[in-house]
Image (cartoon, rainbow, N blue to C red; front, side):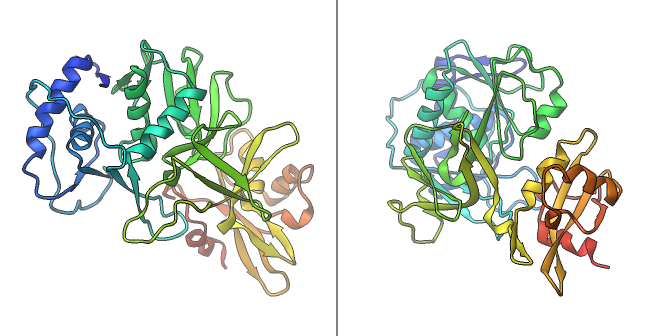
Amino acid sequence: MLKLVTDDTTWDEAAFAAAVEGMCDQVEHFPHLTVPFIAHTTPEVVFLFFALWKMGKTAFPLSTRLPAPPEPLFVPQMPQPKNPKYTSWKEGTLATQLYTSGSTAAPKIACHTLANHIYSALGSNTLTPLEKDDRWLLSLPLFHVGGIAILFRCYLSGATAVISSKPTGITHLSLVPTQLLRMGDVSSFKCILLGGAPLPQNLPSNCKTTYGMTEMSSQIVTDHQILPHTEMKIADDGEILVRGKTLFHGYLDEEFDRTAWFPTRDLGRWTHDGKFEVLGRKDNMFISGGENIQPEEIEAILKAVPGVEEAVVVPLTDPTFGARPALLMRPLLPLETIHALLKPHLPKFKWPIKAELLPLDTPPKINRHSLAHLLIE
């Protein structure tokens, strides 16, 4: 069973099992097999996940940022500990339903079995070994596959999951690049898994880069190695294709062939020295005068410039070339400066023909198509 620590309370494996048993009493009379709840990062929610899996129910964790949560929802309370009754997990049980990001289309609900999450954690623990004294901070939300993956990694290894705003005593972290930049000195941590967005240059030595997705139950490639129980290949057009034991059960109410290669819609490659690179979204690529332009290639160069907070390239309709690259960035640099920065790296047809300031209120999950109107005169 899991070990869990907060700033003021510690649950060892026995205490955690007793709390989960108490949570089972709360869930027992909920009338549905799938249980929706707002997934705050609290002990009650962690107990709830394990209670649902013990009872063979499906967790449907919802974002804490929902403007008007749907009804009915289950609201977990701190349980009264009870003597645990032994129940073995059935790996084929549908364990979670998770909203996908919907960055290029309407969000879907991805369904995962316990086996999907278990094999993802086993693969992760192979490449990033966890010891019983290790403590992994729940730094990713529990309505996201990355947060849930931390629970499984700690559960299977005997490590401790930590809920805290203080990094004291933490050995492992899962972060996206913006979180890393805010952390300052990270040399005290044993390992930091870093992914979810284009990566900064000159990473600390204790950082492991990782590429993954909801549909593959979290990680696919970590530290330039494909995870055990996961398969990956690059298609002729550069798209990353995946399958394996970590491949999700399918989208809710859609037919799905788990034996086929799953198209990620990401473009990637292996470099000559064995490094794995994600080039960008297949959906983001556009054609300008017969040439393919991948926005992320241009953005990565500009984001590496000190002081540049954000850079987003979008296609601007052009009667001659079909589309030309245009740029939204923060802070805004003069167009001549932008061209000078890109000149050593990219041919001229990839230089933005126009640049505007990216508004401060732009959502973190950027939708390029919705931003294009800011560049139209």
